[in-house]
Image (cartoon, rainbow, N blue to C red; front, side, top):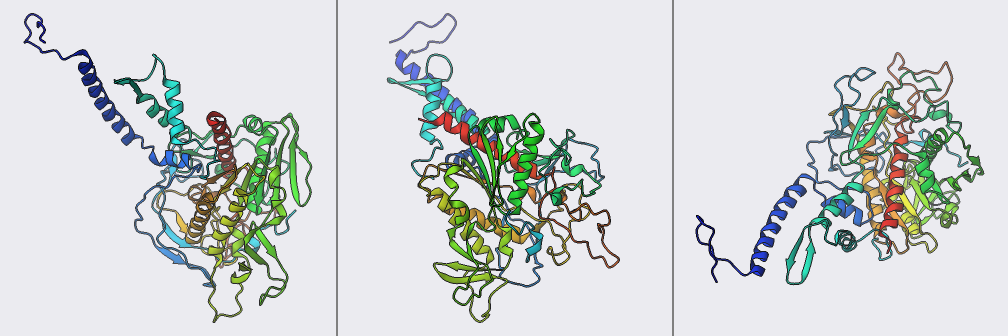
Amino acid sequence: MTMASPRGSPAMTAFPRSISTIMVSVGGLAMFFVFASLLLVSYPIGSTVRGYFYGVDRLVLPISLGNKTTIDRRPDGNVNQFDKNLPSGPSFEVPNNKSSTPTNANLPVAVSSRVTVDTSGSKDNALGDTTPASTSSDSKAPSLSLLISNATKTGSGDSGGSFFFFGSTYFNFLQPSIYLLLMCWKYCDLYHGSWFYDTAGPLYTNDTCPVLTQMQNCQGNGRPDKEYENWRWKPFQCHLPRFDGKKFLELMRGKTLAFIGDSVARNQMESMLCLLWRLLQVEIPKNRGNKRMQRWFFRSTNTMIVRIWSSWLVHKTSGTFNFAPEGVTKLHLDAPDEDFMEFIPQFDVIVLSSGHWFAKQSVYILNNEIVGGQLWWPDKSRPMKVNNIEAFGISVETILTALGTHPNYTGLTIVRSYSPDHYEGGAWNTGGSCTGKVRPLEPGELVENGFTDVMHKKQVMGFDHAIKKLTNKSRLRLMDITEAFGYRHDGHPGPYRNPDPNKITKRGPDGKPPPQDCLHWCMPGPVDTWNELVLETIRRDFEGNQSFSS
């Protein structure tokens, strides 16, 4: 069949209407794929989407190893082998101004090439607080098919979306793609970003928080600088909101949040209370706790904040076991710490903190057999099967598996990754120091701690193994702060550990530094960022479960 051409135009053969429609559709589809390709190249989403689908807020990036040097400063040479081929992180940009007050407050600090140095060793008294006061079918993380299904439902109808007609089937290509991009933005990687100077300052002061431990009260202990309080974290892909106490309590209405672990867990719990105390001046939380379990109750929303001491998160004994004498701590690496497991069903959110106590003297028991020890091994002719680093990885898998298979636990477990210390020039007891650090490290300045890196690596491995064993309806999230906080050597108390006006704060004539704390964090200070991340993780989990519940 032919059709008359418009006057002055060459003749044109017309195809049947259905075939013309198909050709136009195919052309449109081709243009869409070109557009989508350009968009995905500019804003890659694969890794982020994968991380969200697996229910893990962690992004693994392929990064060039570069040239890295590892220097072993461990004084005893004890166990203590670690992988020297660890990846470095993304790069940090910082202001060039090195004065105590930045001239450009909004210039970010971002991650760069680093030199690896092992400053580990025994940390006994540096820890302080030595006396305790799936991927399964039931997972609530949405699947890809559910995401696309929801996108198609929201985009169906005559308005919105680009539809292509083939036979009798409509395909909405555009809206699912945009929906996935929006999901990636909403659930973006929080742990790769930069530090920027915020002139607004912290949300509380050392004078407004009555629960602040004196050792972390840096301003009250005479620290002369304050710039460390103003640096905030900004993820590359999205915005991390300031901590919103009202939002937090509303999300946690009728619920309990438990911080379980070592003295760094106490550090984070006190930061949470300080943030809530300042923002909610009309309500003073009630302390209903005891030495075994600290409990702070917020009546307005029936919310409880709990802290439980557990040095290693696994079962421990002190009696004689085989050839290990009485008095040396025995860690049963394949059994969780029963001191808190009985309370697990009461908790809606758990934040775990561990790792640093694996530098202390202890015996490692696995399958009812002594397999290793730290700062203890009487028979040097008998090789150890498990060192302190491997023991940490096993303990992480043990406790997370216990939570992920507990028949009466359906809560959210947040594993805060290994918190870096900054004892430069030695360990806490061999001249290590963070004196005089007043701002985040700049590119090329980071002296990477090899012990921190390998402990983080083992922790992530334990986390990944536990994810595969989930059988209940609980959720597991990794709050991966290790890389970013490696740059915050300025955030520790250093020599300002107590209010004694006569304390030594500078190096002596022999160059020896004064006693100091380069493990815990000043408050206010960088540790407050952890609770901004906790709030964002809770929001994503709670709101995500509401959005994608079937």
